[in-house]
Image (cartoon, rainbow, N blue to C red; front, side, top):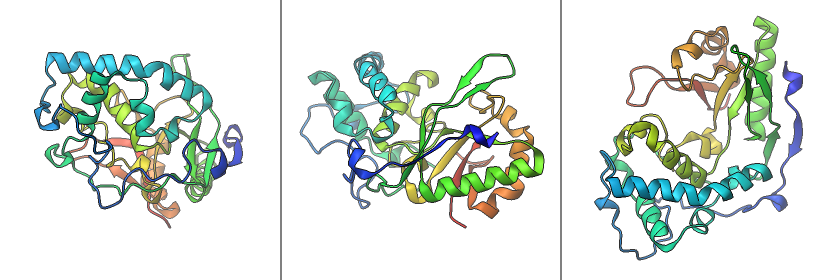
Length: 279
């Protein structure tokens, strides 16, 4: 039921971890993540087809060093505002050199089938959506993390799910809303292992930082999960088979949402991922 969604108000700029700070200018490519520092590792020496064994070990080392900070930010509910300096701070010099080189890989070598998302200032009107515990079909709890959406997107989402509830008696929750490009970089590193440390293959499933609609409030994406905890992440066909998905195909456009990654594109089919285009 929609009553499970608690609207706790607008997050004002004064309590943002990094309110109003620009990550990179819209003219910069998405790889303009590092601070322009001189560093010995060159991004062109990173194998995008499959990371070398040494670089695979470095990725796991970086993730291990970041884990305490990530867990703390998750508990503080501030992951959405993660900045690149937050990623670099817990790392030793070698890890920092690698991550800055990784972040400045030329994205146009990665066969990315989506437009560059001009990176905006952190939104000041984000609405907080509280964590939800859903009971999945196998009896295991599915817990959504606290999420954030720009106010206009949140209002359209509520209007849309209210209409869905009236039409078919079902609703969709938010598995992922706004997240910063720095957090997107962390997620990209985290999921590399799932794709045998191939940057090219991972790009089919995880957006490269600066190309994710989750980080662009003007084109804000939402990943949905249904009341039974079906989010399609492990099996897209499960979400595609939902009555909720068929309802979205027919009605989401009325509320300003459209499917971002349909079948047939370079990106993997993601029936749960819908972006807000405005009404």
